[in-house]
Length: 353
Image (cartoon, rainbow, N blue to C red; front, side):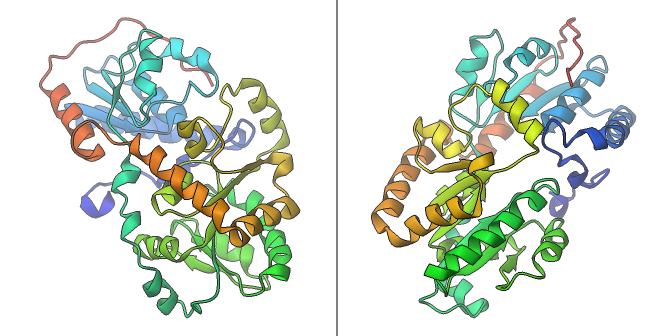
């Protein structure tokens, strides 16, 4: 977005905090960033404000500009269908249009009295399928016979330190059976220094990939992946990469989350399929031994890998909008709203922590 001329008030990594306990040390800083954003919007007086994802931040922002007269669009519906459903009562009046990435979301919100519109998932336009396996192996001097394992420990500074130590021990176990395994870690440039610092003493140095095209080439070359839960599962599905999904958070966060989460799966691929397509190794199951066993099964059993790949197509078909691309659909909704008269709800509710 910066390449297209967007000026960012502050690094987006400042908002990359996840977890009930993990966010506490950052509360004061996040409040300051919220104030900066509100002041900038009120100074510029735009015709329309689009907030994207980050519901903890974005919804508070929308609330604070509610009476400023700006049209408001929130892109990427809050996943209240997964946990803390009671928050939906706070939403009336926060936005003029809610744009959803997942096909089941409009009906879910409609049943609770809120209009929402499905625009498709941007992962379909990510370019993942343009990757070139031979180019990746040549660029990184990886033998044709060496299996490539994608490791995706997350994009947040709070996630990476929890998963990379487990991934290292998993690799130590996996290399006993697959000594030529070649680990690759695709990571955003802003997180790359953190990752490099954490892996500097690994006996086998993973290839660190920060370029998006190199990442897509890595997917094309990969035999399987070990990834944290989230959008990365859809990226890998687009790349046709069989995977094992894992995650680990603060034990207190995990205990509270288990009481609030209402869905049977955390991996988006599984949620959309309505069944376990890819294994989920979460929290106490996120151990080096268990992860090595699951990854090894995908490397050793072509039928298991193929079964996942067949299910990926079924899942991805559900993510397309009725017409055009997801970007086209989202842009059309925004342009349509710009042509409508401004209207405001009188309901004001405090966004819960």
